Length: 203
Image (cartoon, rainbow, N blue to C red):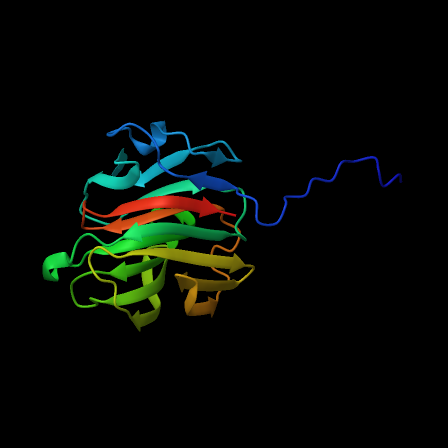
């Protein structure tokens, strides 16, 4: 067989699968917003909750009685996700969480890495997964994230290996095959409408 019979397409390492500065008019809902780069072209999906743009940042404009998710299909499960989050709410002793979801399959089947702002697990970074409705906390690490501070949350996935960072400092890692072929990743929120996400990247 002629090895040149079929084209082979390579993605340049480090190039974006998704890049979104959330630059848009206030109140535009995420599904109507066009990211700067979206290789798959499917745009954002509000899996749970109502997500929109304000001040060129993403936010939850309507809370629901559970966690909220907005995801986008990157076309690849093995990738790096990162986002800038500015802490704007101390939680007032209520369970408020903000972070990223990844390898999202369904409303009861996903991974999350997040900062717990208030409640029983306040001031912790938590990595966990929901497997057909059963929650498992994989790791929990004490962390200081002051109001007004902006930090870069990043998750690197390669096969079964998952590594989570804040400002390029490794916080936790695990090896787990759950949802290792699911290519939807995005934003995670729980019980707050004050948090903002910016500079979302998947590469």
